[in-house]
Every structure is written in C-alpha cells, then in structure tokens.
Image 1 (cartoon, helix red, strand yellow):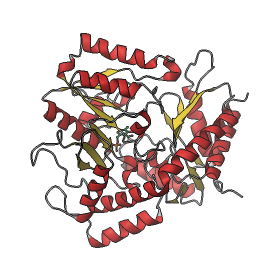
Image 2 (cartoon, helix red, strand yellow):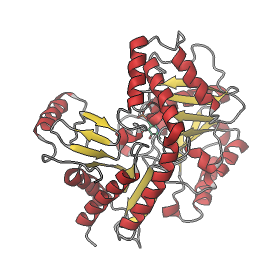
Image 3 (cartoon, helix red, strand yellow):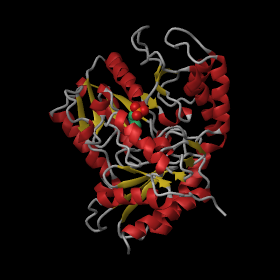
Image 4 (cartoon, helix red, strand yellow):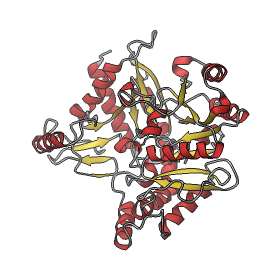
Length: 438
Ligand SMILES: Cc1ncc(COP(=O)(O)O)c(C=O)c1O
C-alpha cells in the first residue's frame, strides 16, 4: 500500500489551533499564512503536526527543501559542522566549507566567461540586491528592466524588480528605477509569444527606457510566482542577443528554478543560453538560509568592502549546501526530470480533459496547472484555484500552493517517488472534481 496522508482531526486540530492563536497575537500580520498548518517535524515529502496529522507536502517550504525534509545526510552534515564551527563571518575570515562550496558552484559554470566568482548571502532577495549593485558598479548604468508578474524578493532593490502583486508594493514607494515588460506566456499569447514580448521591450527601449541607461535585465528562466510559466524555446536566446546588442547585462534569477528543480541543475540549461549573472537560493541548502550570486571574474571586480553580509555563507548553511549538491548530482536532478515528466503525464490523464483545466505545464518538478472558467475564453478561475488548494488541505491533508492568479503549483522535494506523485495527482483530482463536477 502506498503511503497516504492521515487526518485524525479537523484542521487545525486543538493543539495546532492554540499554537496558531498564540502566533497570530505576536507575529507580524504581513505574513499570508492561508493554511492553518503547524509543522512540527518532517521527513521526505511528509509533514507531521502536533495533533498527529500527517500531510503530503507538495510545496517543500516554497520550493526549498530540495532533498526532502530532514534528509539524514543533510542533518548529519549540519550536526557535524555545528559541533565544529557555527559562525565566523566569511566577510572577514576564511573557513573551509565556504571555499569548498564556492569552488563547486564555480566549476558548474552557470554564467558566461571562462572563470567566475561567488558572492554569498542569506536569501533570494539578498542575492538579487547583490546582483543589482554589482550590475550598476560594473556598467556605470543606473536603470533596470524586469518582467511583469515576476517575483524577485521584498527588500528595496528586489521589491523594485518584483511585479507580482500590487499588495507587495502598496505604500512602499518610491522604488529603484525599473521598467517592467511582458513575459512571454505561450498559453495566453500563442505561438508568437516571443515576438510579442520582445517587440514590447524594443518599444520601451525606443520610447521611455533608453537602453544605454540599462545596467541589467532580470528574468526568471521559468516564471515562478507568476504562474510556473515556461517561455518558448527561442525567448531566452533572443533576449540574450538583444541585451548584448545594447551592452546590457543579463541576470537569470534561478532562486526558484535552479538547483535541480526543473530536471537540470539550472533551468537555463533547457534553453542553451547562459546569463552574465545568476542568483540562487531556496533549494541550494535544503532549508538552511543561503543564497549565491555568481558572475564572471570580469564583472565581479568590486573592491574589498563594496558588499558583504555578516551571516552570508555561514559555515552550517555551506555544509548543508555541499551535501545538497552531492545529493542533487548523485540522483535528485535526474529524479526531478523523470518523476516530473511522469507526474505531468498522470495529471494529463487524470484532469487533462476537465473543462476547468486550461493548461498543464512545467519542467521537472516545477509543475503548474492553470485553472480557467472555460476553455474557450480562458478566463482565469482564481476563486476555484484558491478553493481547490484549500480543499486538498482540509479534505486530504495535501499541502499545495497557488502561483500567479489562477495556477496551482506542484513544487515538492526532488526526492518525490512515482508513487507519491500518483497520490498527489489522485488527491488533486478528487478536490477538483468535488468542487467543479463535470
Ligand atoms: C524567483 C524568485 N526570486 C527571489 C525570491 C526571493 O527569495 P527570498 O524569499 O529568499 O528573499 C523568490 C521567492 O519566492 C523567488 O521565487
């Protein structure tokens, strides 16, 4: 029998409810927290709450626990490192695990140029801040271009790039100078989505955004928070050429799409094009806070003291990242490719014909299902999407997230087995069919 979630109480159960009430009294109300889930412990793709309920986690802490919750080898490496050295600040001193990790990332050559360097931070937003500062420093230009519906983080620079939800910007301006342009969505824009997107960007260059002022274009190779949108195959190569023609640096934000999630170590490998800078976080250290910004040696030439962070590249986080890379390289990138493809097939056969399913898409274990009111108009079924996500939780004990206005996203640990994927698809289909009977 395959393992399934177990619900012993209505959610939240009594112990979880008390913990939630206490948290809600004292923690910032800016958190979204739609699921009344209290995670007490986890293993693989399974989460336990304090009332004895067991959940199937198809969210991986928002695409972070790439090796599964508490992978024994990650836990062992963290414990070993914690016993040796917890902190020393890589900004001022050296320690072995950080150099080892940087060396491994550099050898993966995820950016253009013969040799590259790594800057370590603690979060995706920090990685993008570093990329913005470095791009300005290296080009002497001040302006940026980013894409509508993209999410790059919530610190001032990263928030200025972010164009995902107005709530995330409301009341916080003024922002850094960023011009936002259209991301090519093949489902909504059709087969010439790249032409439309790049025509729009060239119009912006011609009218309000002089390209000679632009330091960098920030783009997600697969748009994450925007709805798990995979661009057409020619988009990134043509964007690369356009950026080059104006001397603009191209930054790939692979905070969500990187570290094996799409079935390749980096999502841009699917498109045969490398950026000038890349930003990584989320899955890089299996849940410990760590991010990396990589750029070629020609670009990363800023002076000592130009940028640093006390905790960035902390020894324990680097130890977790080194084992995470081992696990990804040994089998998990491959597993993401194989199980992700199987999962899309299973979704197609379970719900592909459902009238509210507009598109099933994705790469590896970055899988989205776009829900629509009807297939002819493709009107977005945002309420149905929200209801399905919550129904999966309350009815079945499956943790799912939305992405964009009306997509459901599956971003589980890359350890997901075919059996676990089959269970997830079955539970999703049950909720969809219950809320939107055919
Ligand atoms: C593509 C992308 N970039 C940046 C970020 C920001 O990362 P963090 O929340 O670690 O600052 C996210 C977070 O969801 C993301 O998906």
